[in-house]
Image (cartoon, rainbow, N blue to C red):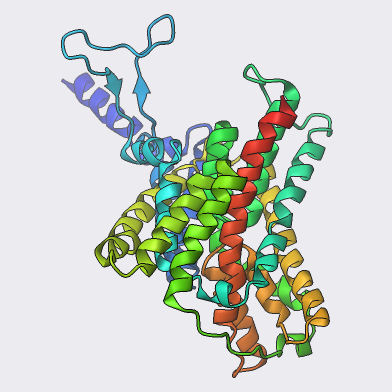
Length: 425
């Protein structure tokens, strides 16, 4: 009787979270839970993109609870030949379902489905009018993608360091091809576009999909911290005080034609980018055509919010200690930060050059909005401008390069998806 009771108590003790934390490696789970609470603090107390950081932070906490297995993935039974086993009587796949967040990840992130739905929602929520009214801001969105290709080159360069490598196995590919696939996936973080980063890495480097998703969404959420110091360092007080002329009105016809025209150009020139560009333009057409209000409302609100919850929890689940606390993941985070800083700097510097060459004034701060963290980057540009001049409202002007950045990151992803398999082969 006593032995049975003691065994039961011991079994209960070994199933507790406290026991898990004191096991080898358990300290890592504890650290990542603390990181999750820090993200919640930044979201709730500081207001840093709560729609992103609250689900990501909570997902990080849930996925690091010992023995809970909340982020475990779906596992299918395979036969000796590696084929999925079917039940002969019911003709259904025999499967073991993982944790609920693991199922979110498998269903929407690993498959690349969630990024496309997010892009549709972003398109339905976004007014392309500022970009149409001031087309030259498209150049600022393109300049901000410079960080993507610099990070790609940086990843390739790191492979030359003895003892450090992102590529542990070629998985049937040549070593050069494997390196380029990983480098392209890491580089796309520089666009500060989480959906694009997920979509690209799910196709080129699925092994690193988790860390890349964490890095991309972390930098999207931390735009208000990362960008202002760079913007102030590269501009003078006089430049930050520049007022821009009011944008011309954009007709409804222009707003309807624009997404169709962009889609046609994408189909002709870069079909590999059409999944992202197509969903972005489809969402925007729902908004602008004025005959699909119910669909537009669903894309903007119910569907967008549902997917954001599942995507945020899924990204947070990749902050598990065994996945996150290693040199490879930290290297990805560092390269992503460098890429994002370079992209921000490139946008500001090009805006400074355009201001020198243009007859109409351009505030260089809007160049930082060329990264595709929409609308966070535009709001940051407006905030920094207001700090220098309380009557200087730059939000609508910054939305031009911000929208251009969304298109630019999708185009960059399409270029990488089209070229990397060729040059790496």
